[in-house]
Image (cartoon, rainbow, N blue to C red):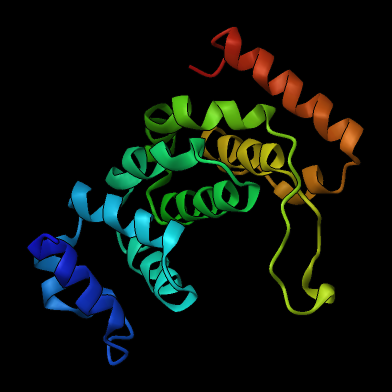
Amino acid sequence: MSIKRNLIIKLLDDSDIVDFEENLLFREELLEDPEAIKFLLEIMRTDSHQRRGRARKMLLEFSDDSLPEISKVLSLQGANWRNEIVEIISTIASMSDQDKLPSIYQAIKLNVMPLLNDSDWIEHDFKNPVEIEYKSRVCDEAYMLCKYLLVPDFFDGDFLDLNEQYRNREISTFRSRIDQNLFS
């Protein structure tokens, strides 16, 4: 195991670290390192629940420059996995300047666009069903991410209020506009 992998494991397992951004080792040795990103994604996919959660928290400290690397794993199987990665991308993108959002879209679109055809339902991991405000599919989440990146004042609640048939129509129209390079 490489030195960086060992460092990541050490930081993830250190319960005294609450905010990774404040950790000097993380900032100087791991932040924005593509290999660190790959390893954190691997941990999120395969490791214990606690370590996965902390790996996600660590990934959320990365800048929008990391999003092309993060978006590469959207092709892996599992609706919940793909949704989790879309959520990470959305969170990191939401911390970026609005004028950077179209360039973020351009950087990740090849990895995100196939999700617009993925109608798998996401099984939310909420302990209380009352917490589930909307049921969504992978394609819904991918659509909302793309729309946010291209139209920052997009309000996803209006889209989520639609039934499945109307959501499908919205996504299909959006895909057509992308195919015609109306959002290039």
